[in-house]
Length: 214
Image (cartoon, rainbow, N blue to C red; front, side, top):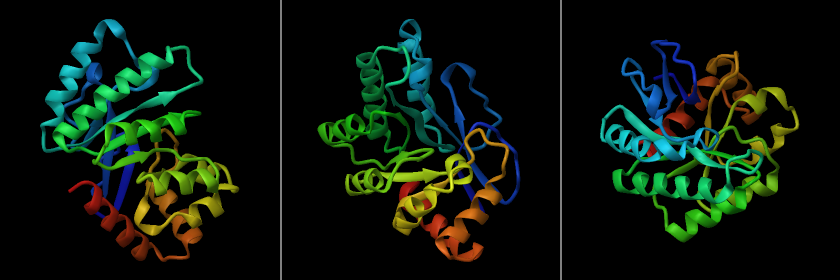
């Protein structure tokens, strides 16, 4: 693996890239080599919840299921927040049971996500995907034991440069999510910001991968 794409919705099947492809229980694609699977807060369906959780639990036992998610909390959607919390907590219980890291979607609910991690005493790695916020929040999350993954906003928002530079090298990943740019382009920008050459950056992320995806 030269490149690791921590979170993507598009499987591109490149020999030098390990892609953690986001999957949903109802639309599972068995041809994807490595994936995460979870219930995104946008797509919570109370009627199908038990079935979704059953599928997730079954898939989490597979070797090539690397993580649960993306799952999390989003205060800018219509889905009732207490329902989101309940579904998120059920998935965290599964993450702990099967010792899988968690890919987190979080919008305007960072304090709640941190509080839930603390309350439930979650020990598996939790990674906030698509981080786009300020230094202060980044520091809070890292102090609370989270990893941060950067991609879309790193490319689109130059103000994120100093936030990314301040994140310790052992606490970040890179991703493409839904952008058209390749993971290699994200790596190139990240290596420039971190003042590392590409080989050094590959080494940093490879080491983080080994720590998180044991």
